[in-house]
Length: 419
Ligand SMILES: [Zn+2]
Image (cartoon, rainbow, N blue to C red):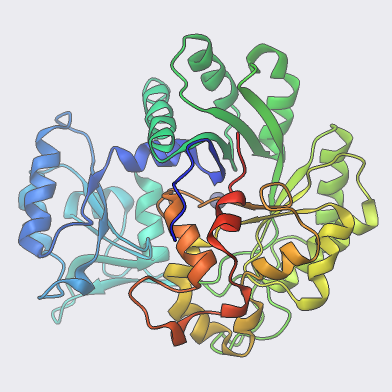
């Protein structure tokens, strides 16, 4: 039985400016060959200002009959002298043309600790950059100007509205985002409600100026910290070593010490706001729960974002302390293979949604769903698929990750809450 898709959902984890930016790029997800990709890039380039970067995302060359990126020569020809960069669908690799490589100062000799400039047999760059080499190029692409921001943020909000969301939480709100959203709302151009969570330096600005920008539909949600990294880079902080980690950091990385997390909890609580802590590995989840337990904040609504692995002994601590588990089950769809390689001994601890609900967290209030768009797409159907079936739709049931943590479809929809 399928339940009709509700329309007033809450996207609990989004990045609005980045989403708007990705919506303005060429979408390569339906391309089936290098020629297709070049044609799409040429069409997109024709619509841009003469010197604008040609940006694209969503390419999946591994799935093409000839699994090859276009050559550097082809990319240069299609760009006509302008810088061009096109992401692979998983954001771990991109291709760039000569102008973009030059702009970023990347040559075949540039070395990256966790990344690579891919060269051909003759040592010449192919345009393909992996991991940190890809990020270094991306970070050199000029940020949208102040004048471009309102249009991008509005497009992001319209995109979320079209997917059935009536509210979104921006989980790394820039200091300027409050007044931009307030202006959009006052001029009747904001299609959804927005709550802002910001890094502590931006939080103080947003908090001290909030009277100038807050409206009934745009509000300050709380602070945001990052306590660890990500699973794909093996920097999520784990209680036990990864099966395939680099020897210098077998359990990943704590990005904040216990004292630093505790300090952040106190600072945000003192403003009368809750804190949302990015914690992906089970050690990061525990460190965050420990800090909240030591401080016992008076403000309700403290959240742990992602919680991709949670040790069984930590599950009941969420409900006991009123901590919200803010989960993005949709990531499971892309991470199944990576999880099997990284933590084969603990797949049963991946996104224990059912246990969290059974421990007393209410769907939509104590356990909430989001996507982390634009890292992955925001379509709520992806998180429903992952929460109910614990695998991609085209996979056999035996490949499901901890199928015992599956929840009914109606419960999964309820986890999105209602605005
Ligand atoms: Zn995020």
